Image (cartoon, rainbow, N blue to C red; front, side, top):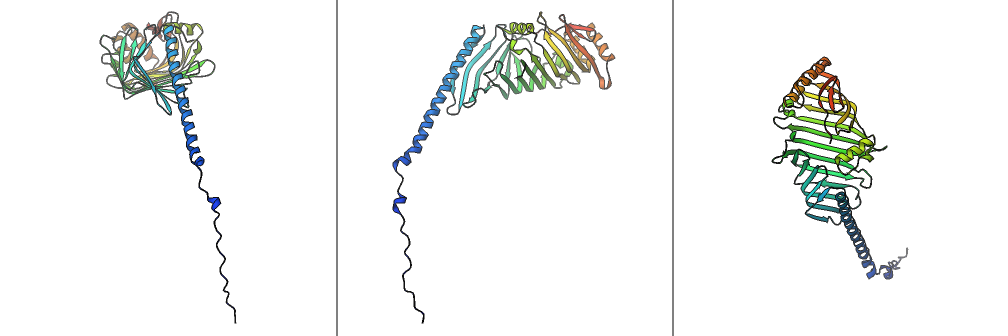
Length: 355
């Protein structure tokens, strides 16, 4: 007969109470202490960056004033803690000695603390730019902003963008060519060998009534594009706009046009290449290889608005018609030389004045 095993089951191991001790106060305090140190250090870094930003703004403004510029604002504040720097100016304005100026009731700049070489600038209440002879033009829109980067370089990157813009000359100012535009872009990109790319674009512009564009385009939109390369950009500096242009010209500065065009209704002027400069008389020099569509209509409108003489318009129209190929498109060269503009062999008027 089998014997019953009456032995008791083995006892469960008793947990080691010493290994389950509650964490001490140090274990609770250390994470908070580390967090506190990080907050204090970050706050100190932000305050230093804020002070440096204010100092550099003041230094830049003082340098411009010493060069003859009028730089002012009625109020300035710098905030954005903890991750950004937000600089806000009220009634900001910059006017260079020759009369070009820009002002804004509110100017806002923003940069992240980890990337202070890149700033985004906006004018939420619009801006006003002033022409030396034409006077001020108020600009409003859905978006008006710009970005500046590589501020540690002699020439920074600059991009401007405006959407749904409206242009309104102030009372007493001369008219402006456009009254509105769906989009305006401008980009300046420094490159190697003392060069910089310049790109400008206007989409769906609306011409001022009775102006040249309106006579050509009617109620149809106007588009403008310009893609070029500037040489000798380091020489472009001076006390004012004329002085900077003269210094650039003396150094051999030129603009190489890669592609450009103006579309006004059915009329189209396109440039596929050319080189431009500025003569010592302040007028444009150089030449462009262009194509023209509806050239007679555009030239007639220029004669009606007084941009060129009627007899010059007739002669230039004859040249365009003689060189017209398929699709009512003519090829020709526009030359700016000795203060005059010629289309092919025909002098059509003075060369555009740069300063």
